Length: 125
Image (tube, rainbow, N blue to C red):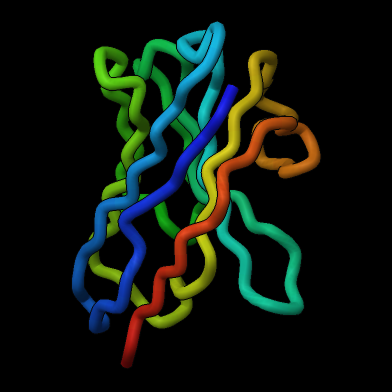
């Protein structure tokens, strides 16, 4: 599967951005899709994940209530709507895919084997 992330940019504190992850390739609908973010010098951090059908999703505590992950199966695209953005949300955002993900492993970046290129999000104070 191939993943293509887009939609990053510069926004002020309190603003919004919507990231997109275009998913293509064989069995693309079979993949759980997660979003991670990374700041230079730190580990890649889990943000959110959505199930194959889009019916189930999970979030990190730091973004819960502000970010919404969704999936358009007809367009093979996963979105991350980011509202009430804070400077600490800044970083490079990556989407990742994996076929077999369970609750105990979904937050670990090493459990995802397909990654898109990152898109930079910068939130100014």
